[in-house]
Length: 148
Image (cartoon, rainbow, N blue to C red; front, top):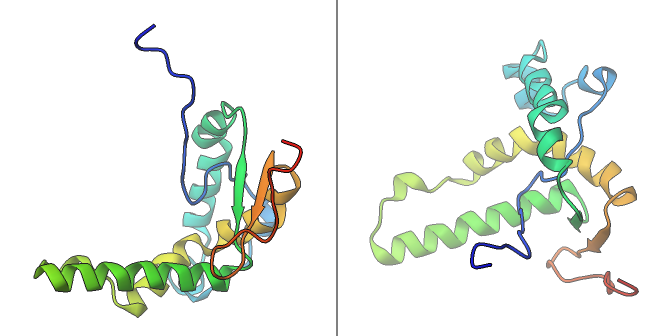
């Protein structure tokens, strides 16, 4: 059939994430949570979404592949690299630099994802169908597809 889809890839930073326990949400993980979410309202809101709408969506996945970063610090470095490349492209084309984050902006941006990223790095490798462990340069540490 012309409208039949054999494979649909859903890609994203936090695809497949699971909620944390209330106890895990209690303590802030960074200064952004400490100063801008001291009562944990945003943490609970995001966690409730993982329990509800996202749980339903992620429950429809037939297979979960994790591109496993070595650490959250490496994720920060990768995001900085991405933004620096964007800055270079925008500068070269004479584009609007207001759309590009400086290093402090990148640090703030990823602080919003630190909690969930650290949680994913702790718990998802034990349940993902395929774990592709990456080194700091984004190269596969070993062949995750052996036996798949």
